[in-house]
Image 1 (cartoon, rainbow, N blue to C red):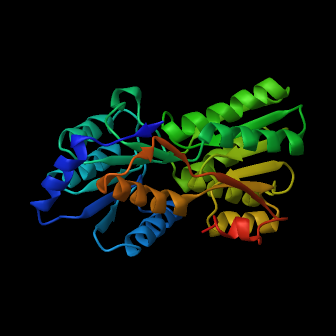
Image 2 (cartoon, rainbow, N blue to C red; image 1 turned 120 degrees about the horizontal axis):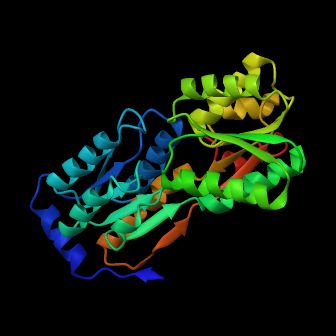
Length: 312
């Protein structure tokens, strides 16, 4: 499917032309404190550097759970009349009214990483993301290959109800249940806080000494999980799979703490997100969904070009 802009973007450009923020594309992510989102920033910056018509701002709340702060950032961007918004929504429903207001103000919005809820349908122009369901199934397949089909597997998740979490963890669970006799323990929600994940994983390992596998479903959660495995002396004793690819997680792969990490195209999300907004502002039609992909990185391919292009 294609989304073809009509009068919406004409009004967006007219609005931007009359403000001090003319040409600004606001990139608003879930938090600025994560390397994943800083890599999105690098991609967005690369897109901006490739042209001269627009500027870019990059912002996000202190934590992914500070949803009202993210809503305020979107409202502030609308109020200053930005030309377009690239948004990674922390909550599928809480951000919907702000995105609707942007639409009504003639500001095109491109969603990245996590989907908005059904109430926002028709108010944004494109969604760029990992196919999180396919990624969850890919991790589940690797889990079954490495851990077998019997025993318990724990899921260390992040924020309940976030679009990426629903697809990633939900499809991991569904695939495991449909293709093995593995028993799911959890999910446990870290609120995307590494310290929470460390403590939760420590407790789960203690309460379930028979675990054959464990899955950390985003960057801070997987880092906390990996540190708990090391501190508990359980590293290498069960199949541990992570999601995302910062330096800590790469080191865990090299050291054998994690069997593999599923790494999203975070740089691509930023670069393609900004370029999609620019295409819309220039009157182009865009795909309504753009898959930014996942690479499964392990100690056998971590130094390959394919892996290095997504690690950060």
